[in-house]
Image: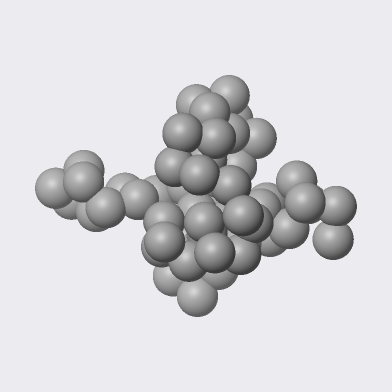
Length: 59
């Protein structure tokens, strides 16, 4: 399995600023599997895969 590089993932506020989507829409992308994501051990902080977000935006 490929190792997750933290440089490929951005925090939720960064994802919202990059895409212009709100938390709810990012959550929907995450739950449908359109965007790869990772969480902290606590499960409270979410990081989104930058490349997947750019694909959704059409870039």
